[in-house]
Amino acid sequence: MVSHEENQKQQQRQSSKENAHKMADRRQAPSGVAQVQESAPGVGSATPNEEKTKHTNVLTANEIASKAKEGTPEKEVAMKNVERLGAQELETKMQQAAVKAKEHFSKRGEKTQAEAKTRETQQKSLSREGAEKNAARQMAILHQNQVAESARKQAEKAREVEKKEQIAEQEQKARQAAAAAVPPPPALSQEEIEAREKKRRCVIEDKQCIDVNPTEECEVWAISGECHSNPVFMLEHCRKTCKACNLGAGGVPDAPICKDLNGGCGEWADGGQCAHNPDYMKKFCRKSCGFCSH
Image 1: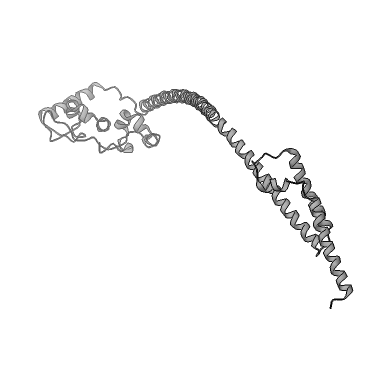
Image 2: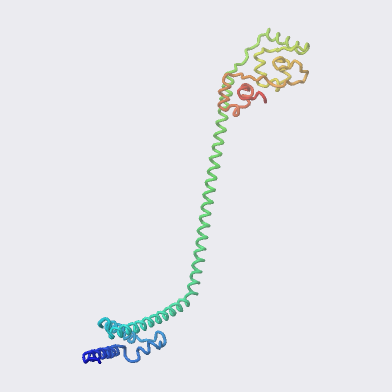
């Protein structure tokens, strides 16, 4: 049998549980609110007052749950009520957010075509401006290149003129030096003239292989190319030096003697006179310039 004290404790627990249920019912939203929440009417139809009431209900449920003692029926009921109201409030907010997003994108869609057209116009304008700027840059670069090319050609022409002037000056100096290095032959006496004429007849009539003029003089002429360029005179006056003893009338010697006639030929050749003053150097500096095989 249950004792009187145990029976009394059981009645007190039952009474506390019923009081907790009544208190939770009084703390809930006004009649119809929860039903409206659960039935989910048209999204976004709740008024600001209704939204405020729902939020107050959640706060109240949280307050009750925080005050209820742990492990009691009142605590359990209060926590379930908090969960239910919180879920309802969250669902409502999510639905409202979805409505706002739909409205936003709907309005955005209406602006898309106009914005696209505006962007296209701006893009065309930017492309046109870019093309104009690029064309202007290209023209400026072309002008700069033309100016630079003109300046380069003028400078090159000036260098060529200067080089020609330098070559002409060097040739003039070389001719002057050659003229100074090779003195003119002395005047011939009457006896020397008669002796040479006698030798010339020996060469022409008797076909003797001798030099009518002095050997030194003949060698200068031979080295300068006179045996080739003036064979009629040279075969009569320098036949031996021209090595033309076996040549008949109208013959031309093969090649001049390979010899330098001026002591400065080596220095002139090193200074480029073989190319700058070839006429003189071929006559007087064949060996130093390497003209012997020509």
